[in-house]
Image (cartoon, rainbow, N blue to C red; front, side):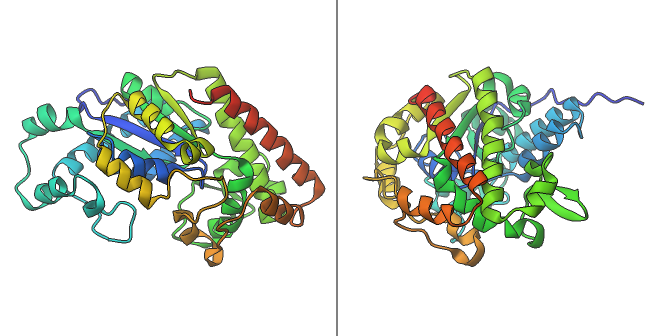
Length: 340
């Protein structure tokens, strides 16, 4: 029996999807969005990582996927409205009491739940909810097809050289750490990340740095091909890490304009100070990613020359050449979409 899944009754809240490579600035964008009026606390939602990837491999039917994503977003809207499931761990990024709307969230949690009609007609239409995902929209358009004109999708990019070691230091966790949640495929009873599909044998044989070069190359090809085909400035905002850190005000104002919202100057100023923005160089400033790497590796202060030399010693010449070509492709892509 064929079933056509649907979700016709829905809140008028708006999703802001933040997608990109690890280490490319997703968390930085989520921080800056705190200064944008009518935006809510950012959320990690693993179903938004898994469902688009499952769909891209043909493992879930489209109507089932879109109706499920829509239903989950409406549930997020409702639980956020009534203060349910607030994160009260001070060391977490999503600590509710560090968000500019913390009083609103606290009141919602402690008071009786709002009436359904009030949430639907008064609260939800003014809620813009950032959801951080991990390359889940690179090879498909499921989220765009789900939300149509409502969607705002922010992609973050960074020079592949500067995100390479983030991945290299993280890869060991993929098959060994139960607290690692990347969608996985099985090859010879080994867990591999979904993006190793099609090159499983090579993935297993090469070292972590070489794996990282290939995964960045393949995933960058996914997203650049998608953007080149579908780019619409009303739906997509491309933010390059080098631009947002060196020309913070200019790129931030572009982001505010893209969202069609306003911002709080005092909150924005505090967020810039906290995140050391703007910066004078593209050298590495220690970031949130460090806590998730093997041995809490630090690269603070490193620049292009140090990282290139370090990488050259770790990889086969074939993979080093791939990295150099990947960087060329990235710079060309950035030039094409700079200040989009």
